[in-house]
Image (cartoon, rainbow, N blue to C red):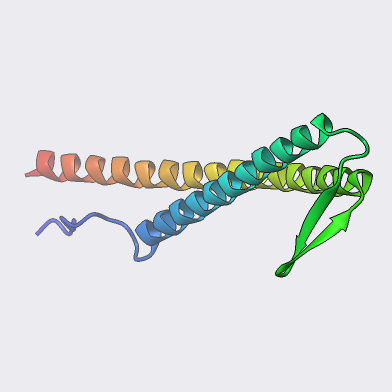
Length: 128
């Protein structure tokens, strides 16, 4: 025997590391999609508020009860929420970018290991 293992030469955990990184990435994407949907919804609400007359009555659902709210207060609340969501989207984008970088580093490392392994197999085959 030439001492070369015919098995894929990964140390335990390397494949699992890539799987964990992939799941992390998917979670970041899912979170971003949720915030994106919330942003769209809040922008829609704001556009509806902007169509109202200043004297319009606005109600807010608090538990099972509709409570009257000033239009300016409702607009202010939605604008603050939009600002918060935009901040969360930026954070999500940073997390996604970082996650992509980690995945790429892991994939590059796995590719190098595979290439080294192929070279060992070819050298062993040539030595026979």
